[in-house]
Length: 195
Image 1 (cartoon, rainbow, N blue to C red):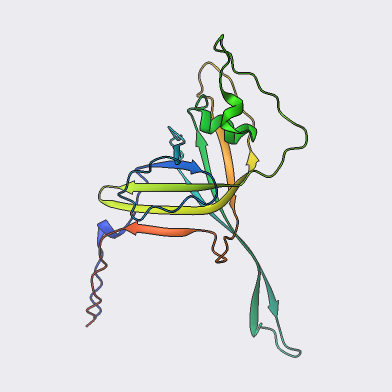
Image 2 (image 1 turned 180 degrees about the vertical axis):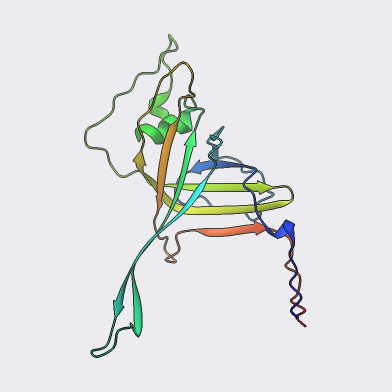
């Protein structure tokens, strides 16, 4: 008989979390327990849909002549994305991301009015991101050295619905060729004892 240990603390529920944005080149957090400080800017409240960590991969199979099963598979595309909906749409950092503007362009004038225009030909707008998922004493941190919002949903303004910006952020490789760095504080996995 095999002794299988099941520990609920090894399962993760995305009970809470947060996100931050900063210029490309900002260093990662050393620990998911560290509070990000400037130049990191909080994204504020995130909808109860939480954070989606996406995998978009394609592969090419190679099947030798005369066989019906491949003997090799080559990954031809491997993209990581993060999806979320931010609710604090008046935050300067959030507006800066939504409209691909520098934060300085969103400073109010002497009358307290913020004026800006959207261009039909936006420039690339890569930034660093830090996402944190919390479940009790378990923390999962995701550092994206270079990410860019490549998909924005429609924005609704409705009486019985919270307005938000729904984004998909595509990650790009840094100088080391990495797209996402993981920094976790999770319970130690018990050793397999078998029988």
